[in-house]
Image 1 (cartoon, rainbow, N blue to C red):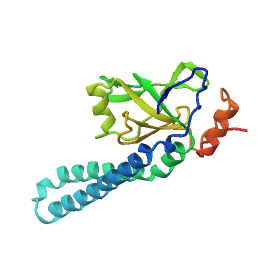
Image 2: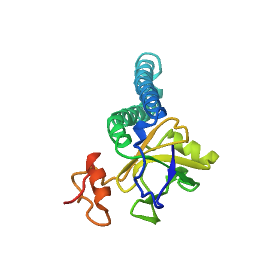
Image 3: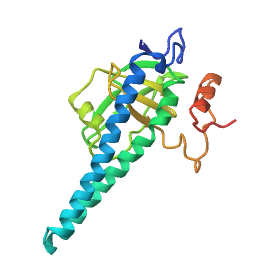
Length: 207
């Protein structure tokens, strides 16, 4: 099911990830899980707000307000991740799965996961797509415990879907400029096929 990047087969050779029987199921599970998190965060926020207003003494209002801000941030980020699943499905229907040994590493200084995936047109170079959010990111925990390899579909110069082999729960990583209309679209270093596939997922590519 999974192939390594590059080789005679080319960087995008093989059936798209969505054609694998396990991929639609993994996507559905991930959507359900993220929906539950989104609802759970907002339910927690409402509960803490109720306790803050109706139960806690006045001196506890400031600490409670800080807790509410953290919960609201996680709820908003959960909603943002939930909104990415339509884009993730486009990626899975455009790119094949690839396996990448050492594709995620743990940065002990930043205490977060860092992804290093090969440039499809220059496999000797690595690209680091970004994972959104600051708190409670599952991949930070996964990277800290150590994993031998990950699987991904996409182009790390734009956006990818990443997972532990299986695939298990799916996550979205991207370059900040891939869809941002306030930045210049990518122009250089793209093969015709890479350019065509990037446009298929809605990424910004110069003519």
